[in-house]
Length: 371
Image (cartoon, rainbow, N blue to C red; front, side, top):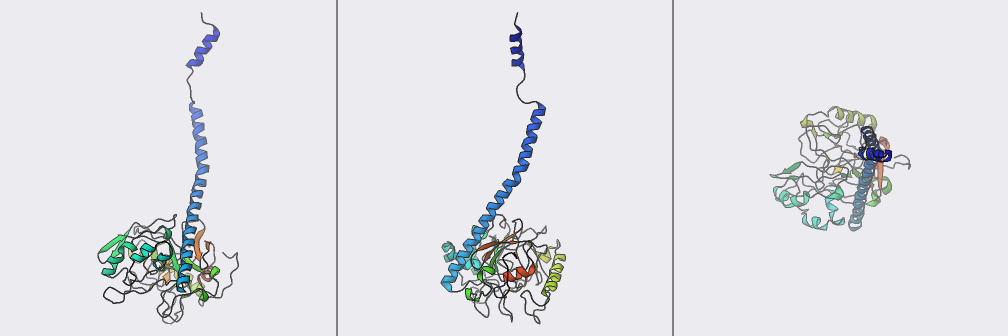
């Protein structure tokens, strides 16, 4: 006859091992709570790393910018008209400041491969000759938080996936980008038709108070949905360019007039493909507004859309309008100052401060806590 002790051992051996259902549910609940607590922290850490890389990209552009200035005694033009292969002047053939900085940012092979004497987009021969370079995707021009373009564009029967740029050269707090006007664009970059490019001595507001490059969200390329970075076409400017050529902000009564105009643009942002473009920042090499040039006219991630005063379908180089700051970073966007430093401009920055930071020679006085 077995003893009571041996019977207890047999019962213990037969007892099922592992969790009960209730214990398992408790463990799963605890794991779920931990994941819910840790996931935002992980995402925040990843975004912090992406933002740090974005800052580093802009710093490298700033170094290249000053190396260019040291070599040429001026900053690069944001656009410069080029000739077609047959010698005629090309409207959409100008090269961007980005393209002219290639040789100063460890991209000398690309710079050597680009023929700056031939139009880069609308000339059949130039389009073909430079397509390998102009279609090259460069990480230095792309914020890691942004998504590079996946859409295809081209001209003269040649198409390629656009490389994109998250950073635009700033024409200032001006709606215009060429200097063939009584009042010149007040930024660091523009199309120098009647004058020459800007040098440091003409940045009288101080290089630490003037934005050189800004950050924007690259266009989605998706015409079937509305995105904050879309550009609305066909809303006439709030000033007549022939009678009021000053397209720098602030002009007289500019605050109310400008906000009224940009509000009409917001009303025009519909699902109608004809009245808006999804190509903002599509190509770093083409020196035109929307493509690689922008302005400092609204605070980052504004509720107002980008807006062009030209009619939809116009392919000329005149693109007066708003193509401004935005990003996927919470709370603001990174900007490169003319002194090479990088700052984070908050979404809450007021218009007067935004315009002052865009201008190189407006004489505004900015306090350290104004942005």
